[in-house]
Image 1 (cartoon, rainbow, N blue to C red):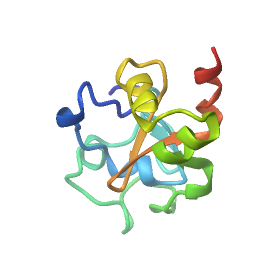
Image 2 (image 1 turned 180 degrees about the horizontal axis):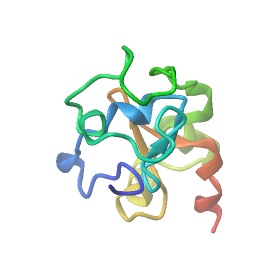
Image 3 (image 1 turned 180 degrees about the vertical axis):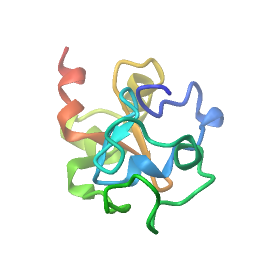
Image 4 (image 1 turned 30 degrees about the vertical axis):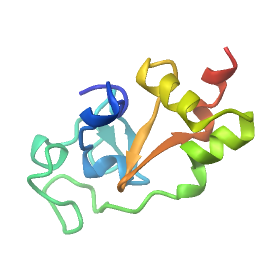
Length: 118
């Protein structure tokens, strides 16, 4: 599992696990969440099983949509820094800025904005 959803080029975008959209997700690097503190089952991670119904070992925790107020779109971040959205995309593609695909939109976590300041 990679750290973040980062397309290498605009036409090479890959899909992300449903887990990225869940408030219980702890991060791709760890591959863990509140429901599965040891490891998210591969069948969920690969999208072969949805986690909106009870599953063995999920501690009674189900998929909970993430609060999108924690994230900014590419255009929102570009406005904050007074740069072109293309500049933000370049930072993502060069892996200088972590990005997440949430739904069909590429988003930047507010906590990761510090990477642009370096």
